[in-house]
Image 1 (cartoon, helix red, strand yellow):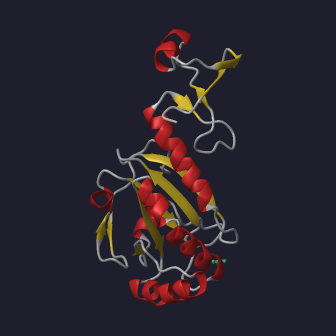
Image 2: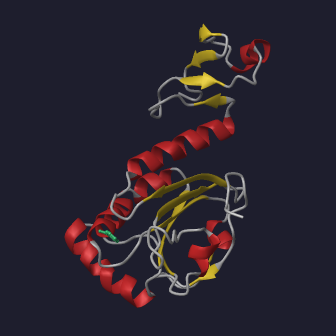
Amino acid sequence: MALQLGDIAPDFTADSTQGSISFHNYLGDSWGILFSHPKDFTPVCTTELGAVAKLRPEFDKRNVKVLGLSVDSVEDHKAWSGDIEETQGVALNYPLLADPDRTVASLYDMIHPNANDTLTVRSVFVIGPDKKIKLMITYPASTGRNFDEILRVVDSLQLTAQHQVATPVNWQHGEDVIIVPALSNEDAKAKFPAGWNELKPYLRVVKQPGT
Ligand code: BEZ
């Protein structure tokens, strides 16, 4: 059955540009992002992998370990990384998994045969410290992802894991959030003593906790 939110992220051991990686051990107590790209030495992928390397300090701040993957070999990944550094102005600073036999791609349903029967699509999995899948998104090969959006979702996931709030449309860290409907007004008073703005009984807007 296809993976779903809340499932345990399948564990695996695979070669990478930083040696053999056992996924769950590698993640430890951190959050994780596992993302696939279709192919080494391709233009959109080159820009994406450079963008992720530039965002590494932001991932570190959020205790997120990032792992890339494609069906290419470690040797190809290493040869390509020089092109990424040359053209994107940043060196790869996270591991790229080599999955030539498609073991990991199959575990995570990263090959969509009606799009391409040999290459991975642009999948993203965000995994919590409990090893459960918190987010899955899939882009086609022709569209580069917005990794600022992935960071935004991580901010939301980390906030909503800690507090009984949800984040509204286009929310950014520091902006107001929404008290989850499951929390009664009575219980909300204890958690949000400064109060909230009740636009509707089910739409209660409150300052982001911790800001
Ligand atoms: C790219 O990264 O540019 C790309 C990769 C595979 C198919 C199409 C585009």
